Image (cartoon, rainbow, N blue to C red; front, side, top):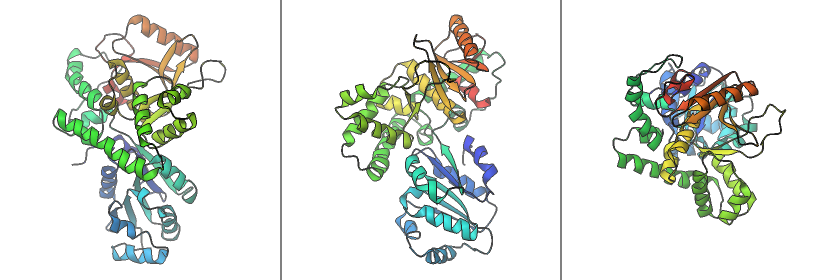
Length: 391
């Protein structure tokens, strides 16, 4: 049985649009499962699903003659005399695929559903050839709300109501599991700790084999590995490219190239400072977060607060643009969502911290402010990870 994901509701309104649906994201986030779910939603016999990791399936689209490709698709059961639906998994493995997709959209109104692992590759490949003919959707590791669904925990509780201790105590052990092992679906569904650790290790191995080795010509993969470990230690901190280049013994341009690749393939995410354009606060240096708190835990040992901060970011990023705010004096807000809502992350907040956040949010003209707490508290304007389920 396919577990529901937030992305289902995002994609479904576009199922019958003429544009191709492209689902991208880091490897092992569940893109194939989403594609299979979409395939089941199409009430038509005139549809085809192909996994392009199979070399024989890739060969169908490597023909220079598009008439030949049409004949192949007809032999596979597609009838071009009426609406056809084609589902292709792992499109980054076929270089000329965008032009093939464009041809069949333009000439036969075929509806394509596509998945691919590498964001930077897909955006470069699809930017011109499919301009105006695609919608791109990004799939991430599970949010905590999705994690609870995978664990078959039903919970709907308004963040405006005070939280009963019993509800918190029910969820707290699951939150610890989420913080420790993260939200990759294949990891979440493993039954014991050793299997979860092995699954995380396999995700890392697969990333280096499939993304790094196949999609780059980096000469020093060990330098990229060392950079990943360095970034893990800097989760939630601003990046200083000069210091990192010195520490790694590589040039600043190389550090930036590696970070561009890591972000483009969804391994990390950089967030920029928030500014209304009026102040002279710290603007230039981005902060770094990983795609998954379990991945961070597997790579480096971080203190509790920074792992929790990464998890909060993991749950916010699916809802829009995320920035941080910091003044030269050091006063800061951990996250600002869509330039409207302020979120401060605390293990257990105090009343003075809430008051400070309220004052700073008011000065910045933000419509809402909340503290996201790991531990139980009776303070107002405090929410927990599972509250993002209702946002």
